[in-house]
Length: 331
Image (cartoon, rainbow, N blue to C red):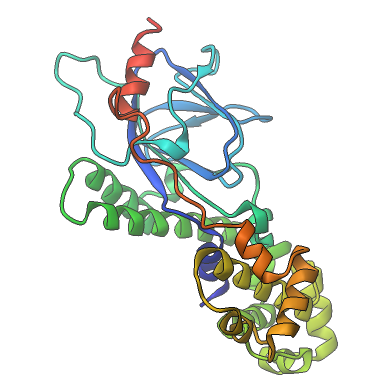
């Protein structure tokens, strides 16, 4: 796999969640910090995004806001509108379509596609750690692009409950996340992981590591694969990635092994072989150095992570209606 796809796949846990949410003015919602990467996509109308420590951002149709670390934030019809605790969490929005607004109801001030991606915070990849607190893609960067097409498809999928609904949502939400990250990485090409992925030699070395993490790579072999000297690869790789090539290879192997231990019942001998170790003992020693526990103990202490209950909020209507009704009660 290419590094970006590999990182997103390895860090993701559970399923992404999304819902179509209507907000009636006046509204001002305060969303607390949460253990996921959240997003807001404006489908219709306008609103303001209120970052935790920056100026308000005006949002219009086509604008996207991604919160890689799930930071606290606000959403309002106007920056001056007082904020109240949000009626639902971004990681618990209802993925099922809600009853559309009727002609007798006031027109929403804003309609958004909101949701969250659950990520493994215990082993966050440095590529994701490099991301800012808030990523804002304005409408001119999303219209008439693959990102805009994905948003249209998501909006259409959320408008009706059709066969294949859940699988379609998962695929579209995964595609949306990858396109957002692509556009951000294309913006930032000076330092860190963005620069690494745009550096032909370092990108080649990363692709080799991610393509065959169990291979017994050496710096010389990676340098030959990248077409530069050993010293040049070691220096540039460490400068951009923050670890020497072999240290990163070991870290990535252990990350993949930990995911297998947590999410599967694969025997330790197989996990050790996949991680590039000839013996289970050598693997266990390396794993304990990284995690502080041997593999078997880690597996017992870290059962598979369960996604949040999709039925949360259904007893009182969908998340969409809950937010709308709460806003209307403020009048």
